[in-house]
Image (cartoon, rainbow, N blue to C red; front, side):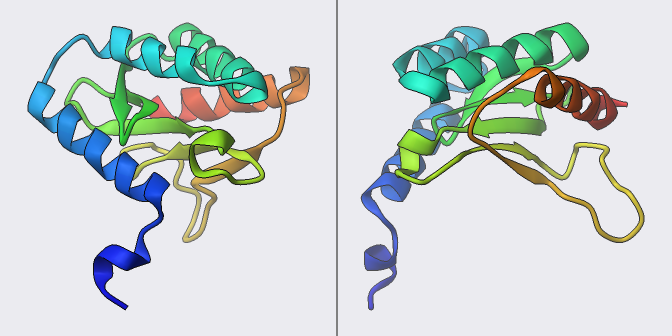
Length: 137
């Protein structure tokens, strides 16, 4: 199998999105992020909108941007701290809230860095808010 054949159409599209993001540089990340959220449908859109609000509320120092065509949030150094991946983008069962290596979530020698989401209730929102605060802590 050739390397190009090992990627799905969705993965190739995400790589193209990343190349576009790199060319744009420090464009209006907030507008780009909100535009990607607006393209989503159903529960993906609802979850992404709420995560965006939670990041703004609990870690206002993070700057919205896109990363591989997904909503993401970066620290002052421009390093991605967390991101949201919609289920619809890759045609999978659940959306993902993920944290990159610059997130300060370390606990001992093993800790989760991504969370599957099929919906958000009060308990999930509280847990996500706590994770976001800890990630920038």
